[in-house]
Length: 112
Image (tube, rainbow, N blue to C red; front, side, top):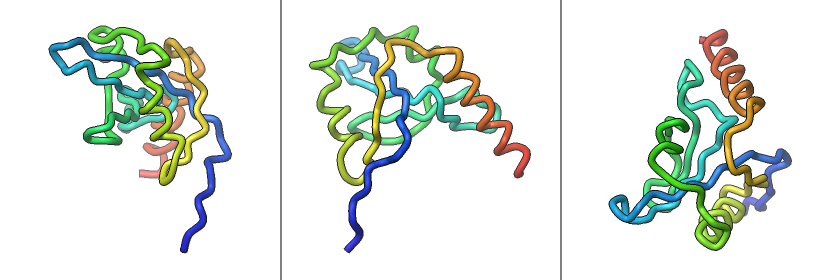
């Protein structure tokens, strides 16, 4: 049996909430994690569908910041087995997040 080990690194996350037309779904954006070779898309997570890609600028435009009580369940899910994230919640993307995402994409392209 594999022992659960929480992630050693702190992962930046931004929680956003869609309006009623989208069911009020909360999305977790990982602004420092690239999802494509250009670094334009970031990794994201929702309850239904789980991990995927997201255009962080598009998501921010069509959502509002999620309140702590609105994202608590999603945060707990990400911090539990099997993910084990150590999350630091931000209200918006920081320049360092975008730089890290772009660097990760450049590293991927260099290995391709």
